[in-house]
Amino acid sequence: NNKGDAKVDDAILPPWAMSPEHFVRTQREALESEYVSQNLHHWIDLIFGYKQRGEESIKADNVFYYLTYEDEADTSNIEEDHARQSVEAQISNFGQTPSQLFRKPHPQRAPR
Image (tube, rainbow, N blue to C red):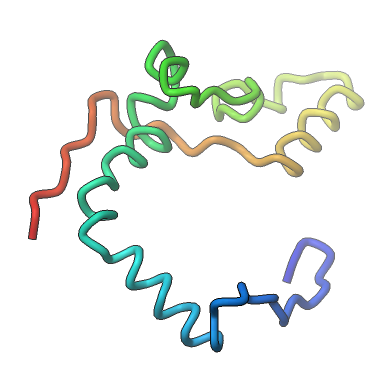
């Protein structure tokens, strides 16, 4: 269900997917592939790591609107109702960047 409690029970699969099971199996195979295993650390660096903020995020073209960062959107300090509601709407509609968990490059997974 989404926020409006409207039931979402149908999805349009891509033309190559022969069934929902085939779609899931193919996606799982891709995510568990050696290629993904060898490159996952790059994604971790962008989403949770040292390329999320600062100079490295600029170099990686990984910069988002300031309100998406968790410590930039403290709505409890916004006194004006309209301003607070605007910030809350921004967060609700566009989401927030995950917490930054790592400050150094994430290590690459060893080959299998």
